[in-house]
Image 1 (tube, rainbow, N blue to C red):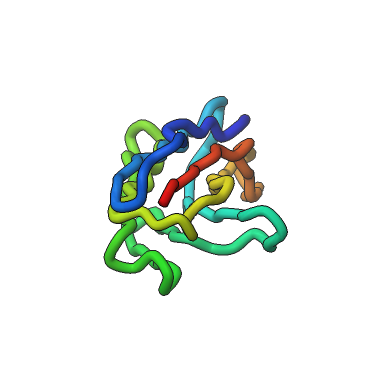
Image 2: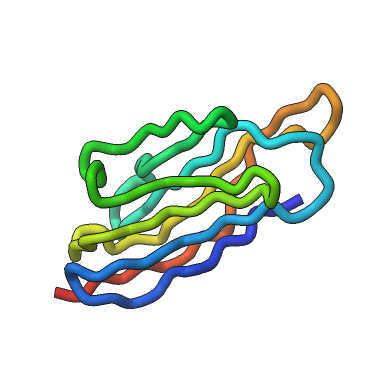
Length: 119
């Protein structure tokens, strides 16, 4: 089981990017999915999350600019990032709480995808 991320890249300030995170492998269920980011020299920080019921939560720094969504049928989460700023530059990581056995839930992490916003 793994999380496969895609969609990072280089964009100018004010531009947009859309990240995807797909669950690969056999699972029994997917609960909360989220996005975190880590800039050089900084700790990893929370960006956004979405529950299985669709409840979303955002860091204050991205509210109004980023939107998290999911396609439960495809076990995929998305992060639409608009009005990007240079301070959004970081490696973005997907996280998901997965049920890999009938009674076992575990947090998985993706490999990370680089987002670079130029000024």
